[in-house]
Length: 332
Image (cartoon, rainbow, N blue to C red; front, side):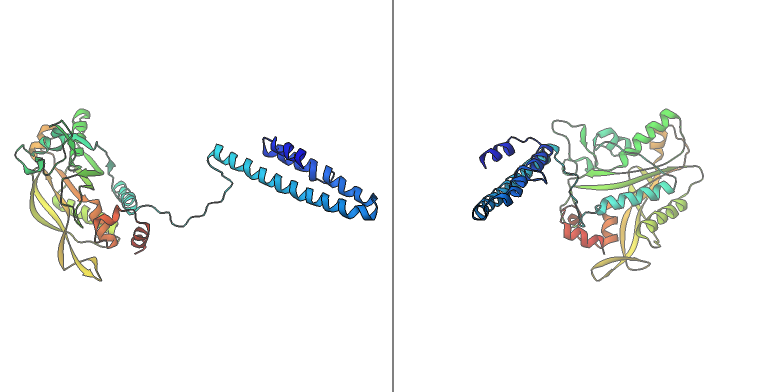
């Protein structure tokens, strides 16, 4: 047996091992031929010789099988991935926020909007000054905004509205006078940490600059966006408000009611704020050579939309990556 073990140990590949298996145990292999010769032995010797050869055959087969497993394991570790293994999984799914973004991307694209992204780390010009948020505004305080270490000018953006300023700069450079553009991105605020607030969340911001567009058009467009997203007719209610970068400004509300612990959108009930909108402030338009242009801006929170659609009561359920919870919510 030792001589055969040595031959098996010296094998370096699965092909060499298979060749050796045929050489030893195949139809015309060494051990097979030895078994064939047993018939020529006297009866009293045949039994003992046969037992010894069968034990040897079994031992060789076992040793070859162990060597085969060793070579296969080594091959997997080298290739890292064994593509021959069939993998079955039924727990994987897209995250609710990813599904919502894909849905909104489709809705905006079908409405003629282009997508624009901006940096998460901004300077105070784009985040505050260009949007008429002066130095005395409470939003610029350390208690509300995350400033970069050792820098009074750089910060984590507090809204996606700053992307609109970058867009207006491009329009001025290219002498473009009309646009439909939106942006979806993460924002950061030193905010209360509770069931409906977090220090980081995602916002959707849009801008429309077109001749002849009115607040009525804006309201109708937003109702279309929300109706498509929630997959039901949504009637919005504009409530007067104030934002430094729009004048006039409105909060966008929808009526809801609680049914079995889930918020349901309806035509009467308790008003719920979905976002804000308004006519872009003339001082901002003048800065970018868009005098006398009719321009509108709107914004909404992505997480709030998802929470309403799926009946989620705690914002942090969207980020705790607890598979059973996310799977249950997505099936509601």
